[in-house]
Image (cartoon, rainbow, N blue to C red; front, side, top):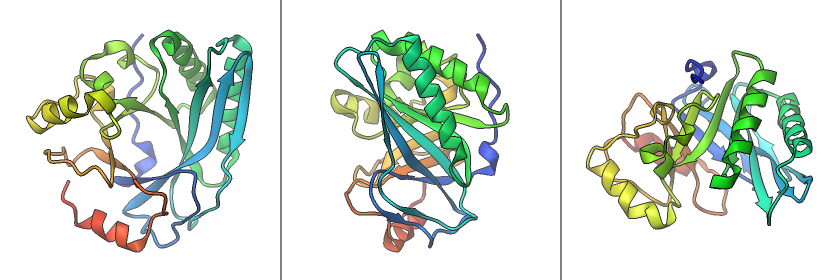
Length: 233
């Protein structure tokens, strides 16, 4: 199966802030420079059920800011990965499109090898149910983007390499990138996922989008944004 052609992400700005589960007041953002990928909900697969936890913390933005609704998927013990669960998570992700100002979707799921078939099936069915022009992205382990071909034909528009919190692969991946090695999977060659508390010494492709995670419990501030603007990616 061929992957879908890359969409323009509705002209999203170059830099996208992740707004996770904490109070955020982002009304100071310049919509020409920044968009926001916010955690809309967390879904937990357990046995044959899907636990649903909506965003609990306030997110304040101006109407001009473009939003990506992020669904985090987690598993508890050994879920059935049944059709019932598949139908339910699709329903809940589609519901996130009803939130105000949402114009793209993102899935955050650290799928184990045994869960990849289920994940692919979920993305395939979700892709068929959303508008053809809607941008659909996923987060991806940076190691997948370097050497693991399982994601290359997923029916998505973008896989964001997470170049932080990489565990055992941390030094290996950062050394490869610093030495000029690019991600081998085309879906991973559109953006970078970075964190404010893990500075990188590598040459970024300036044509790619940057997704930024704030590595602290405090929300984004004007001072954080000033530092981002000053960084030359």
